[in-house]
Image (cartoon, rainbow, N blue to C red; front, top):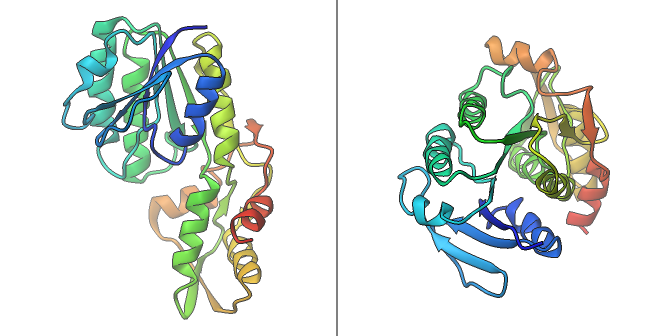
Length: 252
């Protein structure tokens, strides 16, 4: 296989895992990032800024497939729209996007931005596939580490999470890349659902720490959505690696 792929977000948590899998599958990979990088056999780094629209046209030129993993707290919709316009002009034959479970159900700005990006991909006129994934283990850990610095940890009642291992997401994305465009595919979540208190206790136990925990109520529409489990999925492709496995590995 000698297909050329443009990979955005190739230097991030997920992209660093996807890149070697694409190479193992025989793809020539062009990585678009703001800082560029040192190119090597089969991997070309190019500089560009999706949000500003800089460097996108030359990055897209000649790519048969685009795997769009780049994301940021703000501007995902605009960045994706810029990429989609360039991809449409280049007649890319498969545009793949990674989104988040609950993009269409959680009334928070980041989820809304991901949904707008999904719609830009679906409305591109190109063959496309979008995978919604749960929160990665790495982000779950980062959140818990920040919370554990507090003398008393607030615990939003009724909030549950289904964290997934980024390595499982990377493997699934490569499967999608090797397959035909399929539109919105089944969500990918972790094998277990955890309450917030359960996650916090597990982290504290693993670190040998103790903290007071105080139940709180997350207000508004977002709170109701989380309590209703809108960030979870029962119809999902389930990842293999558990949160406990990840935590043991990371804190070893």
